[in-house]
Structure formats: structure tokens, C-alpha cells
Amino acid sequence: MTGASTRRALATVLALAFIASCTDSATAPKTTPSNDVEGAPKLARDAGAILLQVSAYDYGLAGALAGEKTRTVAAARYSVVMRGTSKTISVFNATVLTGTLDRTGPIREKLVPLADGLSDLGRDGDTYADGGDPAAFTRVISDVTVGWQRLRDLSTVLPKDDVLQGAIARGMSFVVTSKSSTQSTITTGPYASAAEAKQALQRMGSPLNGSYSQTAPFVVRIGPYGDRAAADTASAGLTKQGVINIVTDAASYAFSRSGPAPDAELWREPSRVLEVRATSRKIGLSSDGSWLATGSDDGYAALFNPVGTLTALPQSYAGMSVLQFSVGGDVQTFAVGGQVVTFLEVPSGQNLGSGMRFTGAATQILFVPSTRIFVAASTGSTGLPGGGPGLIGGRAADGEVLGDPFPIVTPAAGARIAASDAGDVYVGTTSGGNFDVEVFRPGRDSELTALARIAGVGTALAVDRSARFGAAVTDQGTYRFALADPKTLTRVAGPVRDIAFAPDGTLYILDQTSLLAIGPDGVLRWTASIVDGRRLVAARRAVVLDGTDKLLAFAPADGTGEELGAGGTINDVAMSRDGRVVGVIVDARRAVLFTLP
Image 1: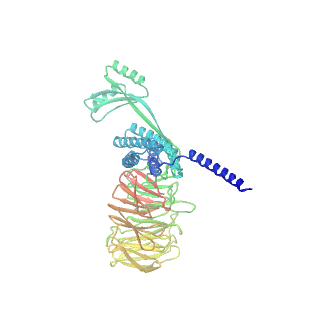
Image 2 (image 1 turned 30 degrees about the vertical axis):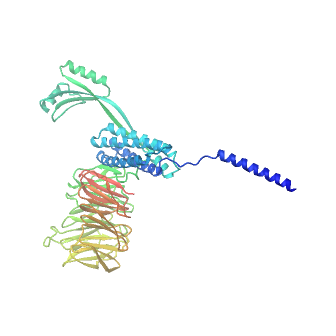
Image 3 (image 1 turned 180 degrees about the horizontal axis):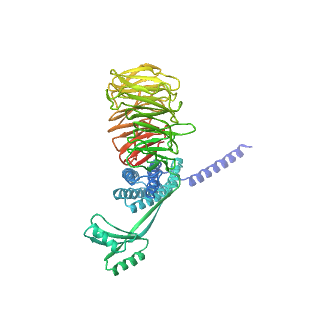
């Protein structure tokens, strides 16, 4: 190629490159800064969390209003939650308002309607909380449906978020529906007294759908009728009899639910609620929490199967103080009683073996799975010197009598007992100003072996299941020690109200105003504040009865407390052996169970 040819070829290439660059410049979009809402993905997740919670609680309330027995939320508890949700929505909307000022774009166009809809949800939730109006609950259900749709619309203009999509899918799977109808009621009166209203109802022929009020204003109501025409016909008949009356219409609502149960979202709420015998004071749960038994003041023990059916109602002696299920084995049994402890078969409630009679009421009972025996302890008749000794008795799972060292005689104040999974039973008794801890293994040892001596009058004893650690409370303080080396005895707190070991060896210490968690390494993990700690069980979470009507569950990792929706005065607390289920007696007439995450 000559020099001229080379120059012509180069010129052609440069020309083509220039044309291409001009074309690219003309077609490339201009890059301009976005003026849309920042932080929208987080706002979307926050909205999803709000809607998911309300969806789950709607499911629970709808179940309660429909008379369901599982995964229900009482109206009072729902109201408390909705008041808190309304405040959360206010904070969310304030954030949205700040974030959308002077912003434009598709995200803003989707986010603002979502926030507006949540405002409606908060307002309707507050309305229901104020008076329990079913019409307000119907509006809440509609608000939630709209909220999920608007959140889904918002997600279409955001980067893909699997967590958000999962929340939307789960929330929309909890289906709650309402159906309204108009019912008509005839009212006559008012009358001078309830007796006069009753007589008026009788003169009307005492219709089956009639009733009279026993407090002022004294009126007679007949109905409700499913349609206005039927009510008008009945009203006309009364008018012919000279009875002045008025027909009024009122809306009636029915609620239903479907889809999967929101177990994860409603773990703070009852998983089961059972109406039990009045004056019930004690509750016991089977090892997996499926069976439960309750004991009442008059000595009746009510046994319920996993679906809530009463299978047995045996009567023992009045003054029931202990209740315990066996663990494992081919036949499940349970023990109930006070001064006399009897052993009963599941599900029939038939008596087994020989009961244990104590000089005073039994104060503790436990079941040792590895040796399959019940062990119970009692004080003397008065609990004071001169009132007779206390006793520790043992029976096999089927109620059969055991040999030495049973029965074990203790000081009049009785003993504190604990057991490990290995089968060892630990006994703490006070004498001479010291709390002596001894140990024996039923079926192997005929005598007790001294283990540790702790200064003071003993009030509690606990042993972790793996038999690594023990703990005791006396009037001198709270002590922790390694069972293999009692010389490691260390004072970890002052005198407290209760102690319990978690399965991982964490020691929970309950005082009046605090709950402490001490790890297996002996280091304090966290402290949580309470008001009036009374009882403690170490389930999957440490659960504390705070006062008489507040049940708190604390996260093992950091001590975050959550209130469980017991809904009344709590008479007793128990847990399943696996720690999954916690049961309480509420208002001496309901058994309320919680399934912990």
C-alpha cells in the first residue's frame, strides 16, 4: 500500500469513528440525579412488619370471637396490642413524611398511599380498642387487606427483596373475613321493676326469644329476628294486644379465619385456652405439653387430652398442693395431692399403686426419668419444731412402694429436693443454722451421702440436668457450686425468691425487682428489671410471674422481656419438661398455655 493509500484509509476510519461517536452521543440517556425517596427498602420492611403483626392478631381475635379454642387472642389483649401498633404507625408515618418532602418519582407515588392506609389502620384499631366495636374490627380487616396490596405495589418499584416478599406472602396467607347482617329487636317498657317486666313478658306468652332486664331500665326485649319483616309482624301482634313497642335494627357481625396458624407471630399469645373446674389452683403439663391436669381446692383433678377433651375427673383430698406427670415409659401416669398424694393413670384417671401420706401438706414433687420414680417432700404437721418431722417419700411411676432410703425423715421445716437426668436426687435440709445438701440414687443407694454445707436457713435448691452445677438459697445469700467439687461454692447474690437452671446450665436468679442470668462459666450475662417477681420457670425462655397478673418471658441471649397474654390473675405456673410449653391457671377457672419459640 502506498503512502497516499494509507492516508486515505486512515481518513476513512477516522470518519467512521467520528460518525459512531456522534450516534452514541445522540442515543445515550442523560444521567441525572434521582429525586425519589431514599431509604424506601427499609420503610417497606417496616410497613411489612406492622401489617404482619396486625394480620396475625386479627387471626387470633377472629378465632376468639368465633368461639375457637386454639391460637386465640382475647379482645382486651388485642386492644393493648393495637394501641401499641397505632403508636408505631405514627412513628412510621412521621418518617415517611420527612422522607417524601420535596421528592418525586414512582417510589413516592406508591409509598404515600401506603402510609395513608396505615393511618386508617391505626385509627380504626384505636376505635376498636376504645369500645370493642365489631364494626371497627371489620374496618381493621379491610385496612389490612388494602395495606398488603399497596405494599405489594410499592415492592414492584424497589430492588428485589426476598425478605419483604416473604413477609407479604405470609401475611396474606392469614385470611380473616367478616360477614354483617341486620337483626331486628322488639322492645317494650320501661317498667317500674324487674318483677313487673317479668309479668309483662308472661302476658305476652313468654316467647322463647324474649327476655327482661333485671337492672334499670326495666324493659322486655324480644328477638333478635333475622329480618325486619318478621319483627314487624310480631310487633303488630303485640300492638293488637295493647302492648306499646318499638322495633330497632342493629348490625350483627360474624368472623371467620382460614390459612396457616400464625404460631411464630403469636407466640406471646395463648396457643390453647381451656375452661376448667372453678377454684382450680394447680396446673401440671406432660413432658411435651400435650396433656394437662389441673387441681382444684375441693380435691378434684381434671385431666385433658391434647385436643382439650376432659378424659378424667378423679377426686382426691381437699387442699391440693402438688401435681406432676411422669416422663417416658409405655404407660403415662400423674401424681396429685396435698397431705395425701395419689397416683393415677393417663387417660382413665384410675388409681394406681399405693398413695403417700405425709404429716403435713406436700411442698414439692418431681419425677426422675432415668429411674422412673416420683419423689415428694413435705413439712411436719406445723412446719415448726414440736409439730413432728417432715418426710420425703418415693414411688415408682405406677405408684408401687419403693424401699430404702424411703421414707426419709427430715426436720420439721421439711426439705428442698432436686434431681439430675443421671438419676441422682439431691436433698437440702436445715439444722444447726446450716443448709446441708445430700445426694442419693434411688435403686442403688440405701443412704444419703453428704455433699455440701451452706451457711444459713435454706429456702431453695436447684441442680442442672447434666449434674454439673448446683445452687442454693439461704437467708445468708444465693450460692452456686460445681457438684463434682463443692469447694467451688461461691456467693453470687443475696437472698432471693427463686432459682432455676436452664438446660444449657445457665442459672436464673429471681429477686423481687430483678432477674439475673449467670452463664455456665459463672459470669453474669444480663440483668432484667421487674416489679414484683414471684415465680420462675426455666423453659426455652426464663418465664417470670411478675406480681399477680403479669407473665414475662425473657430471651436467653440478652434478657429482652416480652409480656405473655395471660389475661387475668395468675394462680399457678408450670412448664413441660422439654421447655416448649408454659401453662398457667388464670382467675382460678382457665388453663392458658403458651408455646415458646
